[in-house]
Image (cartoon, rainbow, N blue to C red):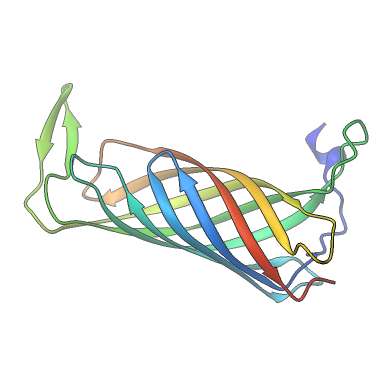
Length: 166
């Protein structure tokens, strides 16, 4: 049923955007760029301050994304479905940990964690040319291969200023 709601004509309505992300664990800057907006595939980069671990840390997460219109006749909203995959590199200056048998096991200070991510989002583009903004809701499941942490799923909302709207 989901396939019927997603249009086959994937066309981005903008060439790039920059904005803010407020997440359950990661908040910061998000940037998206479509190399060729006619096919709606591009790259997204997130630079986030994370609350994972006792004292938090920093993440950088590049993703390859594909964006397509999401048509739901009942609600009549110009929504886009975004799906992507990528990696993340996290830096934790102190007190980063994993859970073993229900208890935290701390890594040494200055720990670097590396993992794989998925990105699933819905975006609403404000349909007024003088307000070139996109609002999004996203889920980002992830797994770490180097220095596994205590979490595996982040949720967030985004607000991006978009460039070169068609």
